[in-house]
Length: 236
Length: 251
Image 1: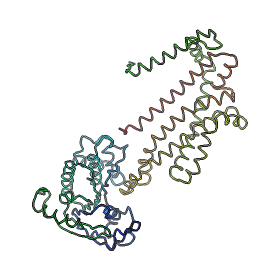
Image 2 (image 1 turned 90 degrees about the vertical axis):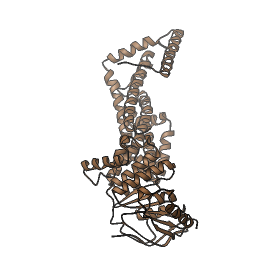
Image 3 (image 1 turned 180 degrees about the horizontal axis):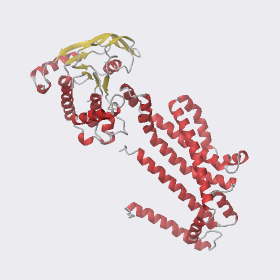
Image 4 (image 1 turned 135 degrees about the horizontal axis):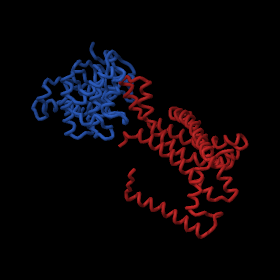
């Protein structure tokens, strides 16, 4: 079963965001969708996640799959601790023992051990986003949607989260669809990178990145070349 | 029990002592127990009240009235608060009612209640009516404070409706309910005692105050006042304790 968007139409007020837009995602990879702000990236993600409805078009594969969502804002419950926030989404799906095991594992993987008992108000923005990522991986999903979760974080935190995220993903290769406007994030995380134009969205660039995550560096020549092509595609 | 004071608490303690000194000076100046008895005489009267045979019936009845008014206004306040918080039309309907209840002088309501109800029920009615708007408004604010994005998140992760209510809505509005209850209680006790003074039920702190005033037992008026303040203080403390349980997640 593939994940596919076919003939999508979506208007927002009198702006046509998507006019007969189609795309097929490779499963088990990280697809980065890049585009200028206001191009409808988040709308596209919300349509795939079923949060908002398309005007017309077909989504195939999405309804059959369990989906996690890493929102731009971490959306943690303020009265629950880090551990409890992760468990919050698991309660309906698994027995207590398994829930604690999964939560404990993710807290370790996301390097949150020292903060498991903290309330969100005591955590920094980057830390909160880590909890949100842990929650998404804890949830037994096939697909993870991400809406610019690194926005607003400084470069050091960003690189650190990218490192943790790619390590997590290599241990548990789910289909990730990642929306961003940041070229560096796409280069460091994407297996497939597509660049969207201003509305109505067209695919300006669709590239496969075959470099293994451990060896990716923003200074390397091949990523630099790709960056040039992406910038050119974004410039439209 | 060891009690230690911080600098600010010393100043507050000094303020209490200052009030007692002013009281003592004034009582010396008037030199009449019918105008203003001394603090120490009032203290003796207060302590004597605790030993009085009818003390429990008097204070207990007032406390029961307070609790009855509080519970009725709590149930009504939470129910209307939830409805007004969820539905803007209900809110538009309730707002003039709440404004009316708040702005009508308590004494007007008491005078009317005296005609309508049994004397023992008047203070309960007054207490209920003064407490209700606080609880209703606070619960309504609490509902509106819920971040809709959190609800989207919970729905997205297929958290059941029942759990969303129990683990998202209720914890979010709990601090608002407690703070509404705290303001309501503060005003409520005073309203109930005014109600008792005017309706003269068989038992009640207000009744005793009115009787003492009639016979110019100024020390007894003040002594019952002290007891009323103590009751209010104890309930305030209980509510604050509950509150700390619900807001420990705040930074």
